[in-house]
Length: 109
Length: 115
Image (cartoon, rainbow over all chains, first blue to last red; front, side, top):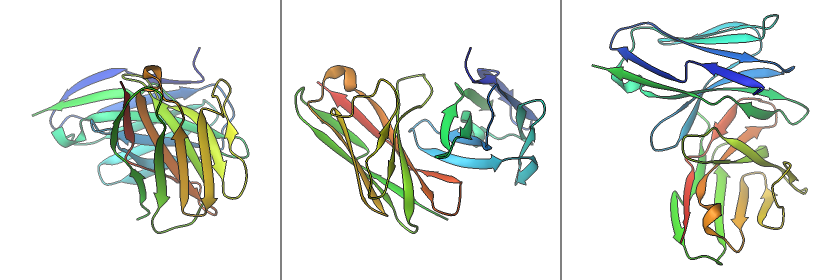
């Protein structure tokens, strides 16, 4: 069993829909990261969370430390949101990351 | 915002040659840099952690003599794939973390194809 699990693996949505991607982890962490990877491969860090909730534009990330669970929400989804969304947790003195397998999101116009 | 520059973005080489990939932090000092590889449709896997001025820490199963990492300054880390073979063909990407900020900044990645 992977230490970081994401669901769903694939998600297709219509433009404007509210989207939720879930992440569960089974290890102790110092922080949880949500990353976005576009088809060309480049990765952008969206959020780094250790507790509570963060919002940036149409993106919202929440984390429940007790339940070891995080969610990434996208409101009013748009085709340009189409990408792979990756959950990763950092742990240890070096804060090295353990990655989930990613969620491939396709937002159709 | 912080930028990490990675070069080259794509390289094709013959089997047996060595390939160097550079990762630079452009507007901050990166005390720690991470190197990952990613196979198609798979998640990223950490290869090694490099700290400025000291030896890199390699993950289990990663050959340190094959994947040479040098972090000689606070803004530059290099990964050299020595005597590359077709099975080394992969997407390699670096990330950097500044000393006082845990947020990670990623390079744009390097697609290596070994013929």
